[in-house]
Each structure stands twice: as structure tokens, then as C-alpha cells.
Image 1 (cartoon, rainbow, N blue to C red):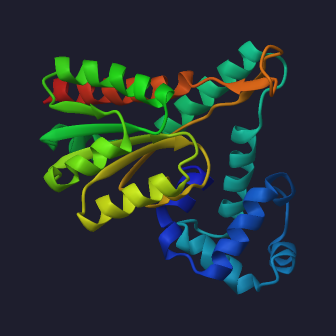
Image 2 (image 1 turned 180 degrees about the horizontal axis):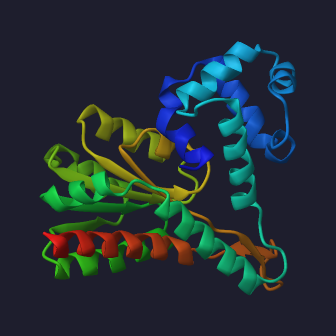
Image 3 (image 1 turned 135 degrees about the vertical axis):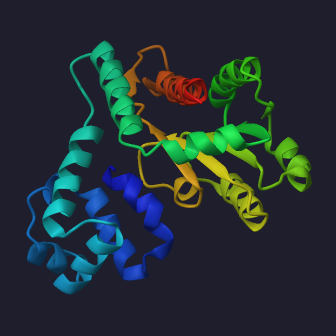
Length: 252
């Protein structure tokens, strides 16, 4: 599992000192690829034993394996700069790799046993991707509904049960609206799948299941800020989830 995915998985178990170390590493991945445990401890104003405890909390066998994960994470997140088509191919390959590295079976079993599946996207691109996903699942006999806004999500909250699954698609996984929604779902113990950009984020750290995509900036001279992001990889993640589900169902 990639570094960010492990951080999201165990984030709630980390203390303030450990989150400070993680923050330093995520902001200095290139430098940390070959850093010694002593150097890292000095740079974070902590001890070597604190670093080792952190690596163990994140499920690594030791500092060497932890540092290798940093190197992999840096290579995955490095943008391909040759041209926009190569950039898209890099995003697709990275997204596919992230999906293949995820232990998908528990999520697929949850999808199979869910009585109802609800989808919520934080923007129109995310909603469009969820609508395509929903059509596939409805044709497969699953009770699926897409919620167009947070208002509908809150209105239906009293009806959600532990037998349902909520899918939330968000680019950043951050924001007040997201935090409010997750708190409400957490209090009711409603299972949630987050689909977010591949980085440490609030949403992914607080949900039961996580899938990730990579989306890089591309230059567009016709736009005021001269850059945009395409979300082809969001559709790819949802399509891979659907294909994995169909494969599971066909094997029964």
C-alpha cells in the first residue's frame, strides 16, 4: 500500500508529534528519499525512537521499508512534464497502480451485501462520473441513488442504515462541508467509501474504505489561470470498481 494510503488508514491513531513528522515528510519527499533516521529526527526536532514508533504504527517493518515507501510515493506523485498526452497517460497508469495495490475484496463484499448505495459528489464533474457509475449498477440490479447536493444527503440521513453504503467523490477530500457530512455519517456508523485525489486528506482518513486517483494540471492558454485539471481518472476508478464487482458477482 502506498505511503499516503497508510497515513490515511492510521491517521486517527497518530499523536501531534507523529503528525508533525508526517507533515515534514510529505512536504519534503524528494529530500527524504535518502535521509537517515538521525537526520530525519533532527529535522523534525524529535528522537529516533519516535520515528521508529511512527513507522511501526503505519504498518512498516522498520525505517528502511518506510523510506522505500517514501521513494515510491515521490515517484508516483511526480508529474510527467513532456506533454499533456503523456501527463494523462501518467495519471491513468498511476491511478491503475493505486487501485491494484488496494485490498479490494472487503469493499466489493460490502457493495454486494449493501441494500442501498448512495453516491455524493462535491462538484459537477464528480456527480457526472457517479451518474455513469449508477447506471451500470442499476442495470446490475443494485439499488443505487445519486444525491445531487449536500441538502439531499442531510435530508436522507435519518433513513441511512448500517446495511447501506455511501460513496463520496471529492478531489481534495477537504473542506467544512465534507467534515460536517462525515461527522454525521460517523455518528450513525454508516459505512463510507471515499474516492479522492492521491494525497493525505481529511475525508480519506475518516472513512471505512478508500480509493484514489491521480489528476495533474495541464496548460491551457485560453483559461485565465492558464491551467486546468481533467478528471478522466475519476471515471476510471469508478469503472474499475464496477468491473471488480461484476467479476466478484460472476464468480459466485
